[in-house]
Picture 1 (cartoon, rainbow, N blue to C red):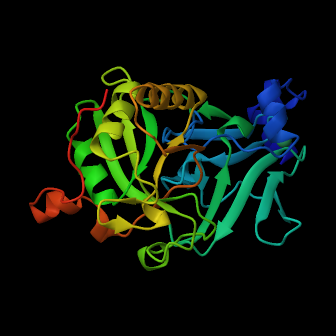
Picture 2: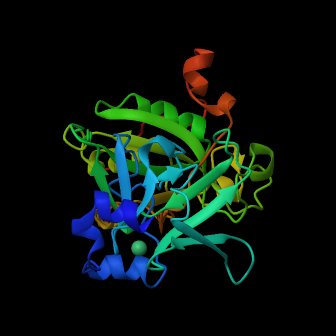
Length: 300
Ligand SMILES: [Zn+2]
């Protein structure tokens, strides 16, 4: 390992890199970056991911896959580079750089994403990507927004109509059960909300436009339900993936309150996104109908 490291990355491996405050928070204090906020979340270019702190090669791009959970995901590590340690509560297994002990994230097994059945869920900020020779990393201009406004079929349908939106996916967020099924979430006891994950091009549609639309396609004054759909899983929620999104959402809630709306929407930090079952995706488009539960109402 040492020889490999020295040969390929002598400039990085020779010293420990100095870290920013946020890098220290994650690598040294075992912090977690906001999902969908990291720069390597969707990067699929060919290359090697090194430990941000010590420069040790940890992961290869050939082991990276799209899990849609919100953090870079790998189904294997470079042999010997990553150490596994069960968390104190025994629920999860932490992964750290075997060379410098820097915190990377957690590893999960049995989720079925790839034949290796393993997901290293790694903070982007713990890594430095070095592209293969001749490889130019393609970074699309893309941002992720998460909204929960009742039945996800309707919110998904309305968001898909918005120019600048690249993709919309229905799923679950915010509960205490891993990989929840619809049958579990519908009981209203797992803590999850039905949400949509909206990927958009911020150069074509700013987050504020989508957030305003969100407040106008569902009723932000109804607690724990939308229309006929009643239950905690149907609550009104904005899950922000950046601090700027949080500020925008709070500003819009204030605007609506100033207009007399008793807004109950909660504004929460985004957590792991669990995609809903296939039959929930593109529900109205596949069915050729329009939503019973969502319609546009001007509120701003
Ligand atoms: Zn390291």
